[in-house]
Image (cartoon, rainbow, N blue to C red; front, side, top):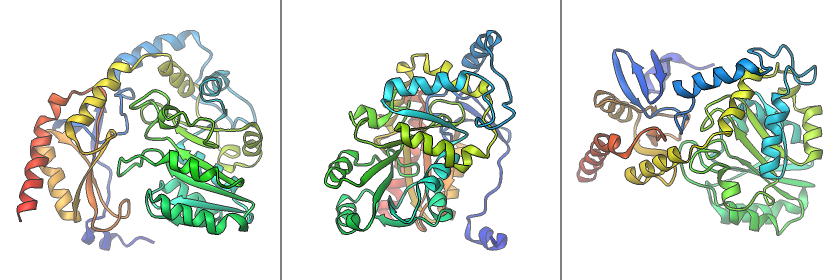
Length: 371
């Protein structure tokens, strides 16, 4: 059990914040700040305009604010099939909706785990994947982050000892904002008949391009399993897992987080279909301009590494005073001595609005290089 006093002393104690977010502004105490803390990368989740338009459309749709049961008991709406069909037509795989990305990774990986299967995971994969591996007591090897030589060595050593090897990675990593070397992973996979690739596209899908990094690199047919969350750039809730027909049937019959969870409400599913019907290319253009201007990352997740907890919290407070809401990310979310600001850029802001933020960060970097 966590020692709360120790957590407070180490600067890792967490508590809920008194905040409320609407569009790109967040209320923090008595201040209104530019919200650079969320995964709402296109500013969809808190858009009043989109919300109001959607509420008008659902007046004529058969959707509900509760589902009443798991999908194995009954479906409350055809909205589930409509959304799954949207993904299947575009990404050439069968689709299955889960309640969240965490729920999907937990259920899918646990269902895949057996004594004949080895998981080989990037060390920076999401906690939901790690929890699934630990809870299912899966066979596991880990390789240094984005180290393709280390991955190659593991595959070469282990491929003959297991019936199946599943490589786990994210396409865009949630705390570092860097991109997985998917093309090299595909090349390594092709060397072995029993190796499969599982890519979590939580932070890439719909953000800088509509269909994610796997699709933009023309790897749809090379990646075996794709996990897409609907709660980040899409601004909704739930997740979609993409696989072949056989695996979809296996999951329907064995993924416990699917079988034993009441389904998300059909209104949430309908919201995602509504968003997918619209063009957000202008917001993506704004987002890319912000990424280029800040220059901390190639994606909308921009980490600014500070190091120690107290220093990171102090810099976060300086940004709050300057009108920016940016969270301080500390261990155990990130490794010790790598505490950071996680700046989440948005498609509903402009590079001009980021100028004071960049000035503060540049001044901080200059001061600490000189000290």
